[in-house]
Every structure is written in C-alpha cells, then in structure tokens.
Length: 430
Image (tube, rainbow, N blue to C red):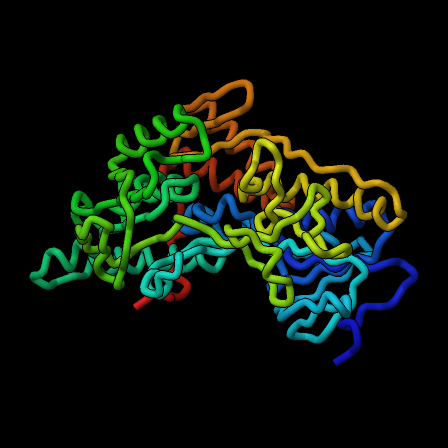
C-alpha cells in the first residue's frame, strides 16, 4: 500500500474529514474556498446523499440517482481536496493517524462527520427483519420490498386471508418527519397508483399504520404541526396510534408493549438513530446518548486536534442541554464556523464559539399537505407544501438533478402518477 493513500505531501497542514454527509460536504466546500489546508475526505461511498428525499425513492417517486451526487464531480476543480473511498477502521489519536481499508493516512486536524445510523435499541429481531432508512440503499430496498409484497398479494391464491392481508399491511414505527412523510406517500400510492397497476386486487384491505411511542406525531415540532399531520394522515386513511410501543417483530407478527399482535410482512423502522462514533475514540468522551461530547468550538473533549460535527457531536447550549437536533442544519452551520475556526486555531488566535440558529422545521404529508414551523410563523396546507418543495429543491446538488426532480414532481402533480415502479433487485428480510 502506498503511504498516506497516495496523497501528496505539501507545505499545507492536512485536515482529514471522515464522512461526506451534510456536515462533511459543507466543511470540505468551505475549506476548499479558503485554501489554507490540504483537505482529505474519506467516505465508504463515492457520492453525497440528500437524506430528506429518501422517502421519495422508497415510494418510487424519484430515481436514486436524482438525490445523489459524486464527490469528485462536486470537487473536480478543487486541487487541495483529495477524496478516498474506503472503510475507516479506527483512529489512533496518539499517532495522528486514521486506519482505513486502503491503508493509513496522517492528519494534523481530524473532523468526525460520520452522522448517525438506525437505532434498533438492541432488538435483534427488529434489526434482522425490519427496514431502516438511513441510506440510499435502504430506500431502494424499501421500494423493492413494497412492490414485491404487492406483487405477491396480487398473485395470492391461498385461502388464508390473514396471510394475504399481511402482505398488504404496512407498519411504520416512528412518528417523526420520516415516518409521517413515508406514510403519506404510501397512502397516495394506495389511492392513485396501485388500483391502476393491479386491477385484480381489492386495496380496501390494504392497511397503513404509524405507531409512535410518544404522545404525538412530530414531537420536535409545534403542537399545531402535530395535530395537522395527524389530521392529514387520518384523512388519507392512515391509522395513527400514539403511546404505542413496539416490543418485537419476527418478520410476520409485530408484538406491542401491551401484548397485542399485528400481522405484517413489512415493517419500516424510523423510531431512532444512534451516532456513528469510530473506534479509537476514548469512550469516556461519549454522552449517555452515545454522541461525542464537544465544546462550543466542536473540539472533542480530551483532544486538541480532533473535532466532531453534526449528528455524531453533542454540543450543549442553554437552549439545547441534550445537544442539537440530529438534522441537517446544525451540521451545516457547525461546518461553516469550523472552517473559520480551524484557521484561527492553527494561527493561535481565539476561536469563535458556536451558537445554533434554528431556521425552522417542516414536513410534507402528501399532495398539497405540509406543515412548517418558523420562529415567527407556523402554517400548513398548500402554501407550506410549496415552501417545502422549493427549499428542498434548492439544496439538491447539480443542475441536472434539480431539473429531473422538478420534472418528476410536475409530472406526478399533473398525472397523479409516476413511472418509476421498477424492482431492480429484492433484499427482503426473510
């Protein structure tokens, strides 16, 4: 193996960024413009993924390629950025070294932007049989499983109606934005798509449920947004059950905390995430929520040249005693300030403390239905839906991707249909 992953040595100090999500991409972009450091971006994929639209890939509304963008295409004119596609195995802080599947790379400053993955809360069966949605691969698997279940139900010739209905019973665990958006999109497919594709099947037997352990949907948003989301979903035929804890799932039967059982061959788990902390980091740095504790400069506790941003980092502010919400905005804001602070820290100057500015939250439930919470106003309905679409379209990387997404949305709006219902492969959990 070539030393330092064949990255040339220069007079510039090296910043190694692990993870190319919202935070990692934003930081690499800011540092590339400032030009003071050599930047190395490490990720297991060669592309950036726009997570807020995973649910549209999962429900055949968008092609996977519409919401991903190659790192090298994004940074092809930035000579101080070096990209390596690899699995990071561990960090050695004493040697200022990161070990990867391709070899080792030295760093002067290390930034952990590794994000979060699905948290199944140590339920082995749930991890084995349920579907999470934290990657483009997960979203594609959900689309495949959804369509395969419908195909099997359509061709079912047995006498066991419960067995057939289990194929049509879709259960989403978790009433956050992801769960709500998924439920709304699948409900629209049930109403507008499936009856046309499968005229032999009676879709009145199809059940879509959202099970939320807490007292309401969209717990991080306002009570008004929660009530509106529940109203929209109920109107669309989705069963919303709050204060409902799921204890187990064996691939065919869901067991609730009350002992009640629900037959379903398709469970999507959106009920929690856990920080992706890398091996080699002192475990004493981790909070009880499993995130790496950092100071107001995103410096990891106990380290002078290791930083963490986004979902993996837990920074305490007065308004956020348990850390910032694990969404895109904190990661991007932390990345922007850290780009400035790294230069100040390297020059021995005082760094600027981070303060999170909450720009608001939003979620879409379906056609002409969305909820928006801003600091100065809260609204819902078609205006919120257009605001949601505009904002998400602006954050998509690549003019071609924006155009393709806009065309798909416009076509679906006019025709009440989309033509992306393709089963490429099936990784159903048996």
